[in-house]
Length: 250
Image (tube, rainbow, N blue to C red; front, side, top):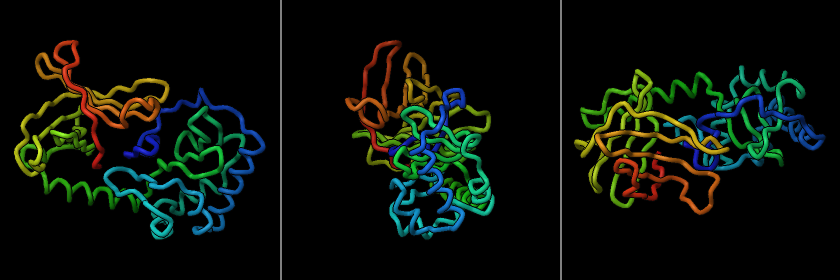
């Protein structure tokens, strides 16, 4: 994701309008990366990965070098390998401010030191495993929650377990349980028709749900050190009545 080491792993919000040219150091790092991909030097590349290396939720993250080598061909399949190998530095790569070096409109991101930060490309193998995992998760949920299009997140606060799913109509559904209840039990509250919105220069993702005079927000933060990485806020009308730090379970 999801991640949240670097949220761009899960979603890329960056427009090519913000892309900038490459320095000689950038080009050197990109050439090194491309060479590793061309020669399939998995061990060499594994030393340049920022771990945990998140994959498209609900696939588990790649946590270390040995896992990266084992799952290398799931991430870099033949099609993606060819795309990178034949890429043009001036046309396909660009720097995008603090976000790093972008390849192919956000399919892949490198840090400025050449480290691999994120891959948003999803191979057929990964997508097949992802769909199987989604169906596995579906069987563990309460009957009222089994219908959804895509799982989005599961937050855990000191008091609540919170689940957000995307529905077939592209709205979002909020469900929560009082701890220690599990997702197999009936939720304390279900709020349909939620919306996605992004905030700040980092385009942090947020999910908002309205239930009568109450508004619930599940938010991510990668920029403000004073704030937790994940948090849930509850508003009554426009007044904030609850602000809870959360952990991202998946």
